[in-house]
Image 1 (tube, rainbow, N blue to C red):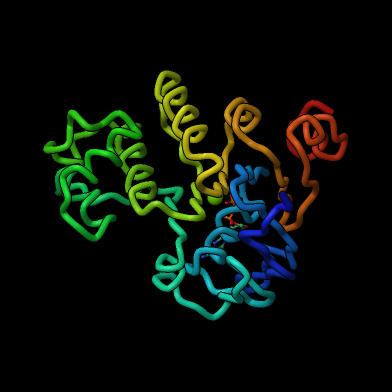
Image 2: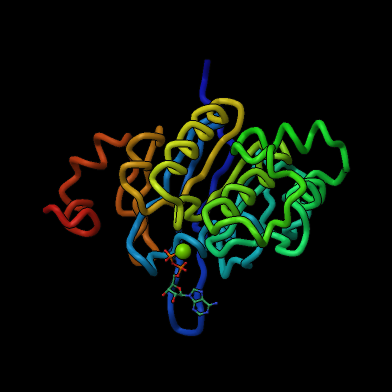
Amino acid sequence: MAAVTILETKGLHREFGGLTAVDRVDFTMTQGEVHALIGPNGAGKSTFVGMVSGRIWASGGRVIFDGQDITARPAHARIRMGMAYTFQITAIYARLSLFENIALALGERSRPRVQEALDHVGLTERMDEIAGDLSYGHQRLLEIAMGVAQAPRLLILDEPTQGLAESEIEGFNALIRRLAGETSILLIEHNMNVVMALADRITVLDTGRILATGAPDEIHADPHVQEAYLGTG
Ligand SMILES: Nc1ncnc2c1ncn2[C@@H]1O[C@H](COP(=O)(O)OP(=O)(O)O)[C@@H](O)[C@H]1O
Ligand SMILES: [Mg+2]
């Protein structure tokens, strides 16, 4: 079966004042793949996915999702088309229960459907607790469950394991493995063990430019990547 492209960017570009955060990036993602986006702090990863999701406007270039040019579409239109994302900074409703948080993401108050979403991250038992009372790691997992609840075609996760304990990271890896294949996942991740365990392909971004794209073993062996990022060159 030929690989179907779910997401493509062409010359995607963003400047902040005089600073080029994302520099004419051409990027392609195949349907069903787990694609990790890595690179040092300030490389432009969050800005890039911000433009893909419509939270940040592009200074130039195009975003094509599911064969349609969505560059001019607002974030809510992209959500309707099947994009879901979590931010680098956790964005839950801290004063509401887990149930209410998921119900808002779902747009309905079906208890079985809320339960199904929470099952993915092992928080079902805590459905009626207040989200703000959860540990930071659990709040992050709740946020991922909110994204998953929407049954997205493209799930974008910006540093989802930041602040998770080792035991929670294993659960996260298992979740992504279950979702992979059904959903395409674009994962910004600093933890290289997680990247190597989950990614079908990796793109390395450095100073707004793509340094390399390839399978995990190729990226790991790439001398430019080692020099610029892995620090093992
Ligand atoms: N809203 C903003 N205003 C000005 N500069 C920004 C803004 N957002 C990001 N930047 C700058 O753009 C560059 C890329 O940032 P970012 O996309 O957050 O990188 P990453 O997510 O890879 O750490 C950095 O130099 C950052 O300081
Ligand atoms: Mg970032």
